[in-house]
Length: 65
View 1 (cartoon, rainbow, N blue to C red):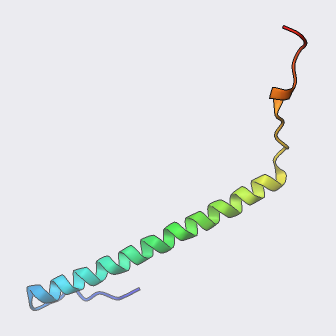
View 2: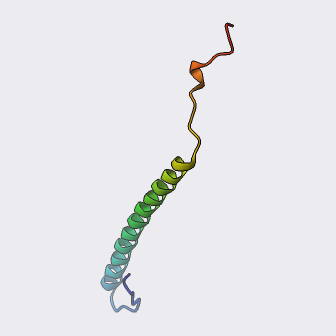
View 3: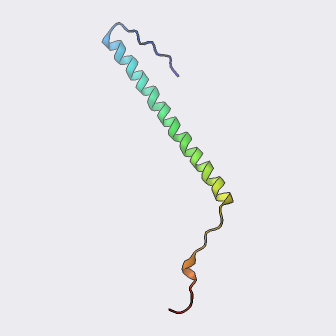
């Protein structure tokens, strides 16, 4: 992560600093989203390992209606 020095001498320098900060935050956001998807997939895989099998009850009946 970039260390930001918010002391500046011109408006252009401040804008450049803020643009750099926005780019860093967007990159961090993308990385976080990717990490969350990976975590979600791992948790779902663990759930699938321990979950009971799903039964399709549409093929069963209680007799003629």
